[in-house]
Image: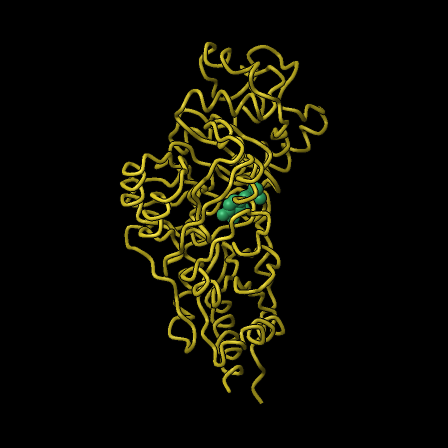
Length: 401
Ligand SMILES: *Cc1c(COP(=O)(O)O)cnc(C)c1O
């Protein structure tokens, strides 16, 4: 008898921190200087400041501010752009909970934009919602690494006089038409939470060329008036103009986190290449499975394949929970965005009940109902992919009537 396929490896395990980074953390712990601000010897750069410089160079922007999470990076950005209580902010309906969370944190109201079948923001809906709402800002998530037609998005931003903020939590190192994600918007935010492309457990980065935004983010993130100890420092006059008018919200990155990030940044492009290689191997292995549809990619998109999405249409449609359970029983953890109540890293706009004017988004609902997601490690091999494909095929077969 043939054994049913079973996946023995854990797709959710992040890669190890490079040994040099581990040694550097030990050194730092012995010194005890774990806070980025304070009585730093003159002329010495803290680990966090050094990381900010390295990151700004990598992404090609004037300023990079390292903070405690991407959710807080988004909040600090909204505040620096002048978002006030009750303001509307345009954003994708398909994104992760920290994004509407950041909008709520800033006292603002999200206005959701519909989702296109390729999981990016629907451009017609964006055009319509921008015209109908009073929002000045578009907070655009490249959710799960899917990048919208950025030319068209920028054209709509010009048409509606919108400031673009990019949420690049899944697109650090990705490109659209040759241009790095995070360089299209006025401001870009990145996550260094454990499942993103740089892993410090928790962490976030704000990147921009706007001097005033940089100064306000530095002050609000909680620089204890040590603004000049940042890695990329706005001119003194700009800092002086904002520093006393901006509350200290204590959203700093610690030196330990910065050491971990500095150890990973040099290998980022290579790791992105490995992720995409793993992703594409898996996609090719799964392609053609009955009842399973792949998400289309624009040839101008150079994505980083750190996760893999597909839509399932089992018969009957109500059998998706059985499909998820059948995969789980074989060691394959599949996330499903169609769940009535989100579980573990999935999220659905209709369940963010603190949003005051709930919208109904039928196109997004149709997509989320069958949308599934698998985490992709950097080192999937052909055997792993064949096993995953067999589990998916089996699980879909078994839900047939
Ligand atoms: C992870 C994530 C964030 C926020 O990251 P945190 O650092 O956990 O706050 C924002 N947007 C998207 C799309 C994400 O996946």
